[in-house]
Image (cartoon, rainbow over all chains, first blue to last red; front, side):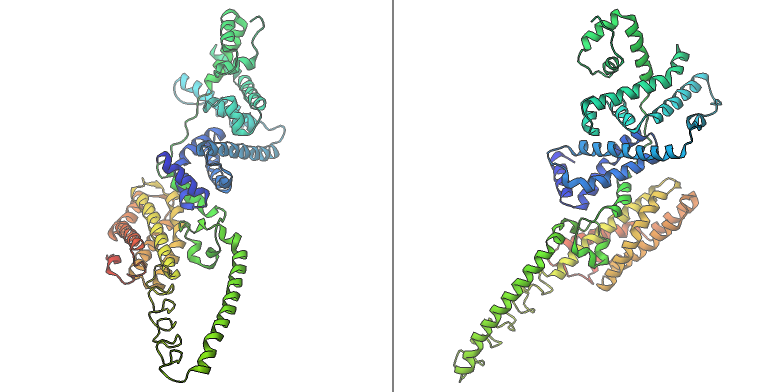
Length: 191
Length: 319
């Protein structure tokens, strides 16, 4: 789809043409899923985010300015949907989790990873990284994902998540700090 | 730079951001403490590898569309409430008439006003035309005598609405309600029906095509699409039967039965069961019929006389 055609499709979608919106869904679904997966770290959650993002986009299409880039606009919606989903999951999780229950420890796989030592070590790193990422707040995780995986600048993160630059920056800093703490034992093993 | 770098500065430096990059770089070369902290930050962040999302196929976008399309908030249309057909014609394009609801109140008021004015004007005109006839018409040579063809009241006068040459006569081809007038609302409806059925057949064709090419194992995604299509297929088939479109109804009937079979199969299907479904689709040449029918309907949609070939052989797809 060239730029003129894409603009025409977008214009039709904005006027309520569901065929045109379907074309946008088909065009962007895979990239939306990739971002949602990185944000949530979970396939099922990512699927939920993809659906919710397109529904939200459809509802908000009227507010989309045709001069803007649809991909960027959608990216913002996906990021915010991911944050919302993580927040609601966290709220449920906090409700269910008792003070004494350490879910992270429960989710640690037994140290019976088969294969050479290196594989076991890399599996352990992966597990600890995933656990550390789960411990981040939704906003920290979103900001960190955008910075670390997606290569977005602080200014872009700020625009995407609707935060001030300082808040975006500090979300990334807090995430990095928590990761350093969580992964410190592995660093000391390596050194 | 005399002071040590903060963790924040080193984090930004790692990501290629921050304002004093050159100064920090020089400082790291001369300050072992900051260099150690930087190595620790960089080492930690290097452990956080970008996760590789599970692969999604080419049909993923379509799958998402199938999942969300029934959840899309209504953006249309007074029309859609009055017909099961429109309810399922997500692709009919009628959604673009999103202003209909908004302006329907105004529209009705305006229509009522126009009717009142027309009735008033019509009444006046009727009075003017009948009164002289009653008083002055005494013989057939008189143009105002009802027997005289020049009299507007005479059916032989083209100005008379009952004269077939009069555009206001429903028998006239230019009358908006004449079956051969493309502007006839019924013809427009047919045209949109054709588009919607063709769209439906295209979507069904994609599902069938996916079934034909699916690896054995999980066909739950295809089942969800098929399930979405069954109700629409049934409605379109009923519409086609009502409209005397026997060949369209026949293809839709066959399609519906195959879609039902797909939906009722186990989601984790064995290779043998999947082969059986495929053989049945193949044996009926269903995919071929669906595609041919869709093409035919689109041609009819573009044809000048859109309402015509209800019993045309051109849409007949034989087994």
